Image (cartoon, rainbow, N blue to C red):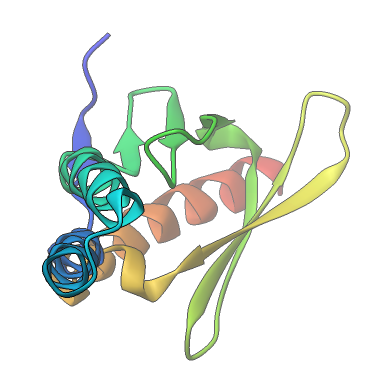
Length: 136
């Protein structure tokens, strides 16, 4: 099944790995320890994986969240989303799992660009409204 909407990660998060790799290569040129070169290679690979990451995907029936290249995926059905809260740094999505236990997931604003996060919030608000209308 193909996602209806996908959101790419904020490129600034991936650039941090590339900057770290550059610092490690410069450190290797100054102090030739193999550790610097090996960890620089790892940082470049991590940056490439992070840059290609799509942390949030909307499918017709559910939402998929994956916050890191090696992180596990979290699937939330649209009809399970109960509440949406925001503060200055994060968005909190409350949902009920298959055992009817309420859980909350925190999504940091820095994960997406400002524009993408605005679209993401609007899309989530629609599902919360639909679920409230169905429950009442």
